[in-house]
Length: 372
Image 1: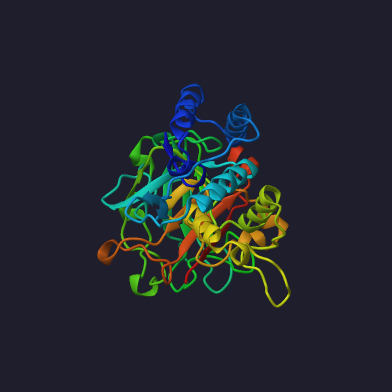
Image 2 (image 1 turned 120 degrees about the horizontal axis):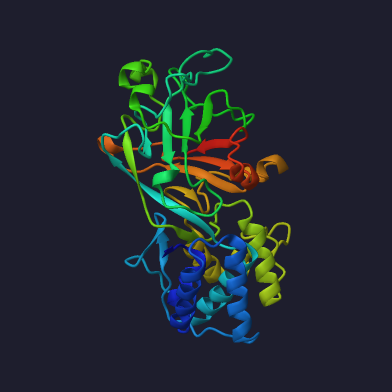
């Protein structure tokens, strides 16, 4: 089991972390795929055993989270006082919103089989089913294109996700410059479709082949984020803390900071004109260190915490906020022939309610993408 951002930054800011990691490894041996509540209970129990006055004597370095992973070559310098406060704040944030399990993917240019986890190409699809098309509007009837396919039976399992079956994301068609998203209704599966095959047919004669695929006009499909197909190579599962892009991040930081340090901040930035204190105004170094610790969320993955170049749409209304699980994220990366690019260095996200995911009900998936 690998460790993601946030909680596990403590490796650099707690001299007692060796003991912490020993206990954590014991925990994983008896809980190979712990859910968020089990993880939260473990953290709280560990902290309680250390006592209420448990303090951290921090060194002068904290890992900088770059591209979704810690990059030891990018270590900003902070004072021991800043890192001590950061350690306490990070612990409180992770107790408030426990880290979530995720599996990261590395897209690799490769020819793929019908059953692989992949981007693009010919999907796994029984011949007795109809490939998805645009349901209504000016582009009605045009075939949708396979964005991604996930074979859960061949992927590392994380809590809450299926253990079998193939999940597919179709999005966009010729002349569609928004890749199937409906910015007025992110749930509207008109220009995109999420399809789940619970039981897999092994006999390829019963499945569509390259010859059965519709013809796409590449010149009219310029907005699609990539060309050809990529194999999705999965990493070992890890836990990922909330990212700074998550709509809940600011309120959680404000709450935890004020509780820990007796502050009266109301936001991260603040507003001098309205005499509203922000973390950046009262402690700029802590503000910077916090962004270094929680500024991730990037990369292709299932689960964990998302990344956005603009705003988290789940903060717009209560219906969107019910989509509490990152079902799949595809980020811009690569270059040249192997480039994956959403508009101007954007990212695509699919979210689902955890109960719907548990029931393998993909009829209400929130799909959005944004770019710089």
